[in-house]
Amino acid sequence: MIPPQCYTKTDATFNPCWTCHTRSTVPNAMFDSALQAEYAFSEVGLRNAWRNLFEDRRAEQDALPEAAVLEYVREDNYAALARALAELPREDYPGYRPDLELARGFDAHGFAVDGSGWRAFRYKPFLGTFWPTNGSADDVMIRLPDAFRQAADGAPSRAIYQINLAILEAAIAGDPAAGDELRWPTEALDETAAGVDLDGDGALTRGAVTLAGLPVSYVGGAAGWPVRRGVYPEGAEFLHSVRYLDPDAPSLIAPRMKELRYAKKVKELDRWAMIQAYERERDEKDEGRLPVYTGSPLVGLRNAFGWQLQGFIEDEAGRLRLQTHEEHLFCMGCHSTIGVTVDQTFAFARKLPGARGWAYQDLAGVPDVPQLGHARPEALVYFTRAGAGDEFRSNDELLARFFPNGQLDEREVLRAAPGGDLDLRYLVTPSRARALALNRAAMVRARHQDYIHGRDPVLAPARNVHQVIENGSTGLAEQGRTYLDGRLRLDWRGVEL
Image (cartoon, rainbow, N blue to C red; front, side, top):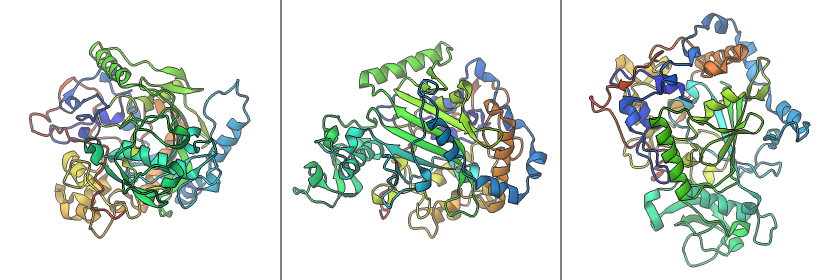
């Protein structure tokens, strides 16, 4: 499924495409940076199916009073979904049953209080669409299989779980080029629980805060599981909620969910199988064949890299329902084969390193650090290359704030960089009026239930989006505006963690 953002008009000048389509990093073998320079759509994709981008629903949106909007977004629709699915017989519903008791919350270290094994982490949102100012707030939780949460004798062990999560974090978010020289900051880890000298100081302590290189394997009950750079172990899970915006909440995260997304690594491919999967993707694209995914809405769809994804979305009454097969396809394009992902995922590679990153999502104090290998802060680079604060160049609030008279005010953007007087919230948080407008657009969209034509909250018909594509040059290469350096991983050096 081609994401809506891929239909952006570049006008041979504006390039948001580099964020996803780039020179990939092993084990990702996609290397799809050529898509910045050329429209190369299948015949089916030439006509933009995301018709909601062009619908004008402003009258319907404006009719919603502020009090009604705030009351709506502050209602919880997750608990009802969890209860309903828990009551269904397994033969009627074999899919994911939400097993995180969100109302009980998380402890000071990000662990779910309910003992489910889910752990919340803070991360720097990916660029453009994923910023709150462009539509939604969100959160992500991770969970590893039982063996990764147990000591060698099978007894539950938080200390072992913390070590295995730290190892995985370093394997996913750390610099792949660092090799044995990798030094990754961690929360305080109890080396005595695993009998492993993690920080390389020659002693076993209960307060190691650095991982020196990557061990050969995980520890405790998962001691036989090899550590692989850029690869999640089989059984790893993510839970991701996409939320309405509460303009009065410090985090902006409202109780009401627009979507609940679940992903599980049901098969860990070896290196050879991964290469074959990427080769098949390229061959299918060259032959004009559309991708096919196994599974169904009842269990989710599975991509060629071992991930099974299942999603729930808001119905016309505000309840969460299972997505249809076609609605599930929306998730597969970005979580299958694009050059920037790390094992087909986004958020965990962007976690705040160490203890500060183990908590429920909150952008307070998060600086606009550079991408790995970059010298300039990430958002500043995005603004420079995309010429706006979103792919469609439709966020007029960010344009007014950071592009006065059509020129980027770098000094103002740098206020959120490390050492500046502000943080990332200054760049990606909408005003109260915009947050309410985005909520109204999402509420109207849910009423129409036409997600197959787009789920982005659209405040007004898109101006800078193609309705029909003509394959060929985007004009960006001719202007020297294509880039090979888009990275998911971040450079946190110089940031107090």
